[in-house]
Each structure stands twice: as C-alpha cells, then as structure tokens.
Length: 555
Ligand SMILES: Nc1ncnc2c1ncn2[C@@H]1O[C@H](COP(=O)(O)OP(=O)(O)OP(=O)(O)O)[C@@H](O)[C@H]1O
Image (cartoon, rainbow, N blue to C red; front, side, top):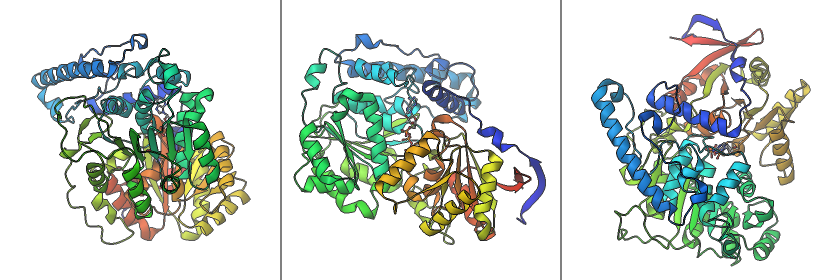
C-alpha cells in the first residue's frame, strides 16, 4: 500500500449497516426521495413533480375505464408541457443551478408517481398490490408501466434492486389474466386459455423468483395462471401442468422453453408479450440457439417496415411486444432490441426516450493488462448507473492463504447479519465454507454442482435469515433478491465491471444501505483501481485492526 497515505481515521462502518425497519412502501418512497435529491439537490418536501410546481392528477381506481391508457397519455402530455414550462422558469430564474442538472426528459412517463393508480393500472391489480404492501411505485416502474401500456417495445435499464421485475410484470397483468380490468369483466378474463406472455430468465433461481412475484399478486386462487418452465425440474410434469392448467403467462429458462416448444407442447404464436430478463446474459453464446428459437416462435415478429402512424402515442398492433431488462445494457443489447423489436424505447429511472438516440459508446480506457476488463468496450454508458447509490465500496489487501480469515474478520467488523460471498472456483468455495463453519459461523455453499433441492433449501434458509453467510459463485450474481443482505464480499475478483455491478447489487436493494468489500492480493490492487474508474464509484482502501474496519484515505 505504498501509494496510500497516513491519514487514517477509525470508522465504525458497521453502524452504517443498521437499517431502520421500514415498510415496503416507505422504502420505495425513500428510494425515490434519494433519487430525486440526487436529481434536484436537497429537498425537504415530497420528491415528485409537485416539488416543481406540477400537479399530478390522482385518479381513483374506482373510476377506472377501458380508455384509461389513453387518458394517462393525455395526462402525461399535459404534465410534460407543464414540466417544460417549469424547466424554462427555472432556467430563467437560476441558470447556474440548472446547468449542472441532467436534462429532464419525461416523454412518456412521470418522474415518480405517488401511487400505482396514477399509472393506469386496473383496480383488481391495485387491490392486489396494496394487499402485498406495494403502495408507491419506484422510479423505474413509474417510467416503464405507462410506456409498456402504450404498446411500446422497451429496454428497461436501471439499478440493481430498483424494482425492474414489477416494472414489466404490472403492465402485463393489466392486460392478461384474472386481474385485468375490473371485477365486472373479471369472469370473462378467467376463460382465457392461450399463453399470452413468455418471460425468459437466464437461471432457474431467477425464473422461480419471478414466478413467486407474479403468484403473490395473483393470489392463491389464481396461481395456475402462471407456470414455471425452468431447467433442472421434471419436464413431463411441466408439460402436464401446461396441458391441465392452461396458464396465460409462462416463465422459464431458455433451454427448457426452447425444448418444450420444439416438442410442440408449448404454443406461443398468439403471444402478446416476450420479456427477456437479464438480457445481456441471455445474449451470451451459451443461449444462442435457444434464444434464436424463442424470438422466432413467440408471438408474431414485428413488421420490419416502419409503423404507419408512428406519430401516434398509442399504436394499434397485433404483433408481440418485446421487453428487454437489465441493470447493465451493453451495445449488443441495443443491437438486439433494434432487430427483435419495433421502435423500442429506452426506459430508465427518470427518463424515457427512443433507443434510436443511443449511439455506440466511445472507445474505452486502455485495459489491455490484467483480467478480462475489456468487455467494457461493449458497454453503453450505463455501467455506472447500474449500482445503487446507497452502497459503500471497500477493498482490503490480504495474502491468498489468509483470505478466508480476512473475510471472517470483515464480517465481524461490519457486524453484518446477511452476507453473500463470491468466489470463482467450487473447490476453494467449499474449503472456505468448511473454514468458516469450523470457526463457528453459520455458513453454507451455493453453486451449480449442488442438486436442485439442496439449492432451493439453502436459498430458502438464507432468505429466512437462518444462514448468516452464503458462499457462492456467479450463479447468484444475477437477479437474486435477498432484501436483508447487508454485505457482499468478493473473495475472488469478478471478471469485469459488469460482473462487479451485478454481484454488488445483491446488497443495498430498494434504497437500503449495503457494503461491498473486495479482498484482493497486493498484485491485484491495480484491477480494483480499474474497476473503480470504470464504475465511477470510489472503492476505498481499508484494513482490519482491533476488530474494526479502518478506512485509509488515498491521496
Ligand atoms: N413499488 C415497490 N414497493 C416496495 N417494494 C418493491 C416495489 N417494487 C419492487 N419491490 C421489491 O423490491 C425488491 C427488488 O426488486 P427487483 O428484484 O424487481 O429489482 P431489480 O431491479 O430487478 O434487481 P436486479 O437488477 O438485481 O434483478 C423486491 O423484493 C421487490 O419485491
């Protein structure tokens, strides 16, 4: 640590881990409050358009009508005009203040709606959301829901843990299945027997998590409207369930969906929605053939000719809507969205705009040495936007043979209660678990070599708080939602900044605080520095002394 300086101060970093017990909705609210403070500087009032003097109509769910989407569009256009007006007023009043802000773009979405009813969702769905304690939409939900309801194809990009799953699930449930419309046409919706939405996720765990999120909203009596088709489970039973239950939504992994579809047991040509979650991973070589089959066979492929009435905010279309989702959006995703979708929109937490406006990113910094950080060249500017702002990042130098002991001391120093540890090799991972258990820590391993039952059981126990430390590999880096996870530790370095972002994103979910500690050897410090540069976040050097995490200030 020759380059590091002397100025040291003791930091009880563990204190920053203590989170108040918040309700789901207050967490969502504080999440966009934090976001809006970033956007507009400090505000003491509510973080909505109202702080800019704009009044949002608060429509009651009882008044829901079939033409709600159209109403929402016109309301949004009013809001948009009002915001433009407010923007120009701010510019006149205090040009300096605005010059430092990002431009406000609300082409088809409000900044942060105060309730789900503002977004044009049907009453039954709002009831279900309220029953589950979801009262306030997150920013990305506020942006994505009207965009998808307006029949746009979309690429949704926003922080890990910002609620992207519901951002696409809610508009689909508004149009498909028993919660669409009001209770009057509810009986009619229950008669629907075709598959109308296919959701693809790269791992079995993520697929199952999405199914559970949808099942929660459907309620126990309507669970059969969604069916999971993930690998590693009995295929004949899945086919039997498809035949018997006639689900309207299927969620699965590419291999299993392609397999059942090729066998003629999954009929998806009439499908209205194709969702590709963790799209950048789905575009990897491993899934290539299966993905090809899926995009060819789900719904009607969009017409390549430009839409006839592209000026209209509501386009009537019969072909499928394609929705792609990830915290990290490399240029390959933008290319795929252009070829698999029609006039897709890029939806982010506070802006919605045509994907056409996104150009290839500039040449990256030279990263020719060290681990494979070069894939960043394929990134749009979004890697830095994929990390929740509430995270603290540290690195700690340790000899290879002492890494597990450093890990243990780090967990104690931060007094972390729910920890996810990433390692790259299964053998070393097992050794680490053994060593932690030998020192009295409740730790378990999670990786692909375990059977599906063990994987599910361990994950369940970890989510319930029965396991303190989960030692895992890249399998758990994507999408895994353990809300209480307060610490992520990289015992082995991730392969690049994208992998760092997804690993780190297992903590600090939905505005909670979280810490990420990377334990590296002296010879790997330069890699951490490169990660820091690419991610645009400080990764502070620290040491463990007297049971505390000591942060060293770098000059
Ligand atoms: N409006 C909301 N109010 C309260 N909680 C919410 C809301 N929306 C989502 N959540 C919860 O926030 C957590 C994170 O959501 P989700 O997993 O969809 O995030 P994500 O952005 O997809 O993350 P990742 O990029 O890691 O996959 C989940 O537990 C979800 O139930």
